[in-house]
Image (cartoon, rainbow, N blue to C red; front, side):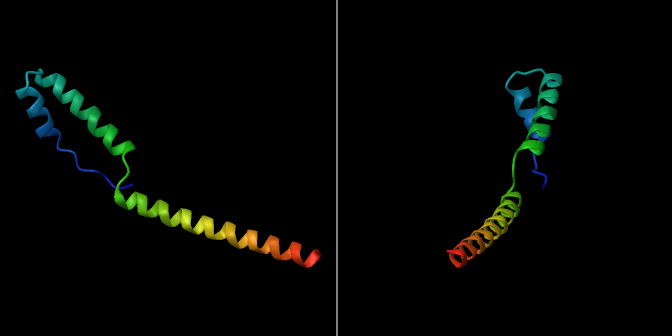
Length: 75
């Protein structure tokens, strides 16, 4: 999974300017960065998933066609 860039310094500065204590803002920024990097998918992640699902669906279709062909021969 690719890393998403999150500017923690700008985030802390903006929170501090809005009145939040800087130590509190820094902790929030660390947790926010961790959350973003661990849970959000990038466009590359989605393309890899799409390729994997396409291959899996294609394989399932080949098997299904094989089963139908075998059943047609039996009947």
